[in-house]
Image (cartoon, rainbow, N blue to C red; front, side, top):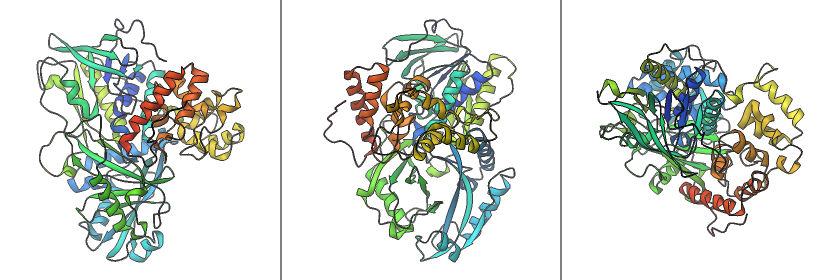
Length: 559
């Protein structure tokens, strides 16, 4: 395999072990490493291979949280949205949203207007435009495909979109490593080591190389998302249940008649009044999400047919010309939100806020352990800041200032020019690539696009698309495969396709380029034909959970 476990890992004096490399774990590792702590980040899968990959891909304030009077959460989210627009401008973009109001809506025009005013007030320092209310005629002019019957008007406001949430986590993990952290994926934590009432470290298995290791640190942060309780059960005694996640599912479809051209719809379902989104995404449309309590296998979460038809029917209700049917769904995805355990009440009422839980303050048998409960994509940076402050308190040290709100992520760190737009124009001129390919690299890697292209060297074959298209959402080039393995912590083919190059979230979920990408690894990374064929099979087995329309049913692999 590619990576080597550091020889001194079992004796190295880590300050902090972070369990879970989703957006929150990667964010904690980056913040802690930037402040000078010696950090080990572990995950039983890849970076961002859990909940981070299953969101609606929005960086937003959570307008509906106002209904539950979570004013601090809305303000925090809106404040963090502004920071992410600055530190990750290649990934986070402004997006207009329209909320249509019908005569059957639970939230009438007056209530929506009040919510919009509150949203603006709670984001007084924002750079995005303020909301405006639209008449029935104005909203139909903007989105003529909307169902006109019963339409009273709409609100229009701006929030943020992150098409590739996975890359936000990857860049945090890469930045953590560049600041000295050790990052090991496919490293399963088997046991928390408890000695004299303190968690002193963890035992983990290298799922790639097969070795077992014991590593120690005075503080361990359990940020395993929906798997938090599973990690806690790896002690000598059980903890009370902390996570009670809800399942959210999404559909991806091609552009359809009546779809909003440049805006997202934030609609209210006729069936149950739950808000959901229809969002332009990755050259297509993303529809979701559902919100259902989940007690199943966390490692195999799949959108049910009931959920799929629910989202199809609600889309057809608000945009009748869509005429969506089951066979028009390109693929689906589903995940579980790591929410606090609340066995009763409406799913939507469970807080989306987070808790940095110091076990020592609740159980004298456990010191040295912190668990993260809840958290949302938008607020990951502030959650990380709070968690690292808590780590310093447990270490008995004064915490240095957090700089993650100022220091851009790797792809946002342009130099020699004023902004990312100026950098992009320069890159397109110098790269020698077609417009679509240059745009693709910039959209994914930002300021590091030239580094990706440099992996090609003089080999022109690494600068052309591996598949039939050079479109942004499908046009992976061979240089990206090499960059993912050499520079961005990828260990498997699926890591490259699903969470680095993002073609695994394209219309054919990477099934049109998987073999070609594996051939690049054979030619340039020394993979055997056997490994290449195995990796392709593993990738195809994994993406079955998406229920993709174009899945290769034959299972034949020819690398």
